[in-house]
Length: 336
Image 1 (tube, rainbow, N blue to C red):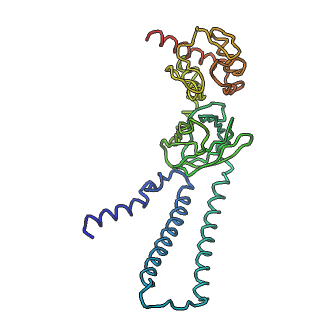
Image 2: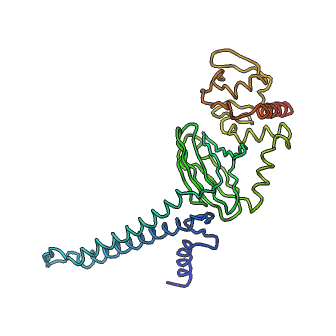
Image 3: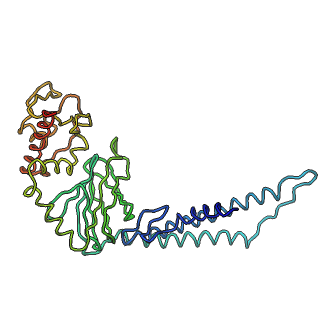
């Protein structure tokens, strides 16, 4: 092998080794207290699998070549058994399986038992967005957490099975309708990390993406206080736009005229809407309010009655902000 080939081979092997931040060819950065243990067990199982794969394949090739049929020779009688060999190849896998079980069970217990002082955040999944509710009642579409502090997630689903997955934290837990599932982690490094749904949940499953923002020491409380007062610090249009994005409205309703699960909201203000029962009405404040709180009361013609109610989830000031945002869409479409 020449020097170039040797360098290429070594670079491929080194790709699987962890960098300074714990990331590797196989894994994203390690950003939680349990990530290192998860990666160790993964790499151990991977190494065992590769070792025995190569061992079996190499021995198979040697035996095929050495004991191949030759002209003029007959097969030799086989031995009945070899006790030492059979005990060896039984004991080694048993020991390996026990090691995997011990470390796997320890990791499972660590990931299933949050500290008593964990900061609790409520999580709700629905097609096709996540919402995160903080102890003071503030709701956001991204998960914000403090660094070096245990965080406990209490999760539920409004429709189908979802699965909350944060690769950098090595955290994954199914979110099932009709019951609560729980998970916890402690982030070890400030930054922004991806959060996915890892359970196929419908046509826009791949778009059910959020971010985990890990705040440095002392900054999480400041962010939460400022974010919670967005109705007082933002204009009604900007606040309505934020609510439209945070509460998952954009997953089903476009603002550019394109068709989604629900009707587009571009240019609908002040115009007549037709419903499945053949009735019509002008889109105004009262209609928008009813559509948010009682979405099944009047379903727009050509669409299915799949919108969930936001009764108890949006306050009157928040509904007014959404209405102002929809009015701004109408003004923008008129200018165009």
